[in-house]
Structure formats: C-alpha cells, structure tokens
Picture 1 (tube, rainbow, N blue to C red):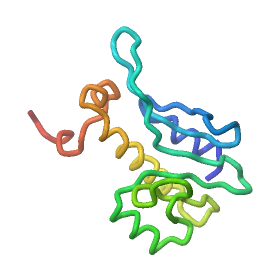
Picture 2 (cartoon, helix red, strand yellow):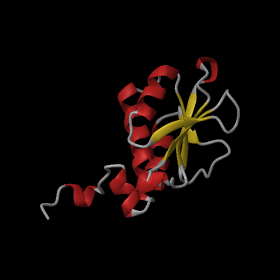
Picture 3 (cartoon, helix red, strand yellow):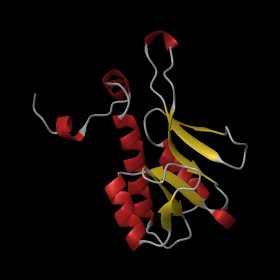
Picture 4 (cartoon, one colour):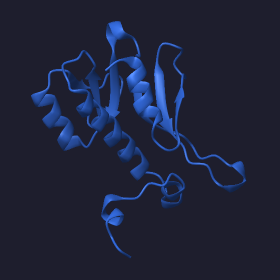
Length: 137
C-alpha cells in the first residue's frame, strides 16, 4: 500500500474528505453529512496518516476488544500515538500487512465513526446499520 492507494480508499466513502489541520505533512480524513439548505454538520475523524513513504502509518478507530487482538497478532499494529489507545490503532504501512486487511480496517473505522452520527446523518450518507441492512421491513 502506498499513500495514493490509502488516500483513494479513504476518499471512496460517502461524505469523506481530506483535511490538513496539523499542516501539509499529515492527512486527516473526515466524514460529514450535509443537510438541506447547505447546512453542514460537524465533521468526524476516521483516519489520520503521515502519507510519507519513509514513515508511513495510519491511525484508525477500532472496537476495543478487536484492537487488543490485532495488536497481539500483528507487530505493525499498536496503540495510536496521541490518540485514545482503547479506541484507536496505529497501523504501520510497511508492507507487512495485506492491502485487503488495511482496506478492511479503514472501512471499519469509517463505519464506527458513522455509527455515532445521528440517524438522519447516516441516512444522508446512504449508510445503514448492519442489523437494519438485512431486514425486509
């Protein structure tokens, strides 16, 4: 995985955009839903990356129990620096993890963040909770 591939994955989700609140060397990927009349909701962070191939990493939100399991099995996954280590993993992108696994972790991070948005915002993003997605109501 290279920085361009990570950027493409992060920006592929509805409402996702890239921001640089910490300067040009750190990409912050956020999600935000828009409402009628052009009003914007507060954006929520789902990925943060150095985007530097010499020190390439991404911080991603993760379910706490899964975070512990991933860290125990994969040396490239640790508690995210400067983040709540219970909920955020730091993932070193040095080629030791399969691209598909990284893609899945990015998607999981996005889903966890969107799950915390209001139902209206989720609907605006076209996102459905897993338990509702398969129902025939």
